[in-house]
Amino acid sequence: MALDKKERWLDLFYKQFAPLKTEIQNLQTKLEANRKERRTLEDTLTTKEEVEELLEGLRTGAIQTDPGKSYVACYFAKQVTSTDIVKNESAKPVLYKQCPSCKDIHPVLMSYEQTFDSPDGDNWQKKAFIICPKTLTVAVYGTITKDCRF
Ligand SMILES: [Zn+2]
Image 1 (spheres, rainbow, N blue to C red):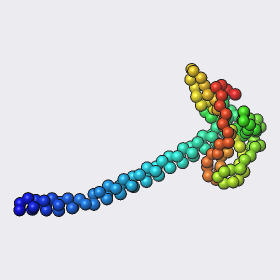
Image 2 (cartoon, rainbow, N blue to C red):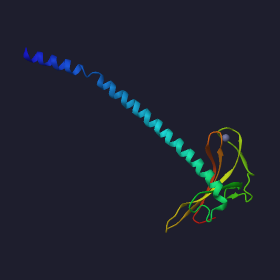
Image 3 (cartoon, rainbow, N blue to C red):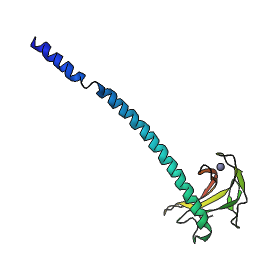
């Protein structure tokens, strides 16, 4: 008799905590959604910061003493081939492409920078791209890398 009474009491005791499992599941679901949202925000921020950096590179490209060495240097692109990306010396847009985001026509830019610096070997990179002013995103059209300035 005494044992039955004890089990009943425990049953009632545990019943009070019945919502705990649901509460934990709800929090886990919320947290996972939050993590996804955070990752999306971080990705979006990275993209916007990249746009900012490229625009800054375009502003300073022509006046950098050793273009691309310390900061990315950007220019308007004159020609994009499979072996090279050539800047337009007159610093004006001459080459245009349709934007994959908004379908408008935007000028093609190019970046030039050292992406790797080591005693064993360096890496220099030219990249052709457009920046969409409507979506503030970058669409890359070609990348060329070499182990020295070019
Ligand atoms: Zn666009």
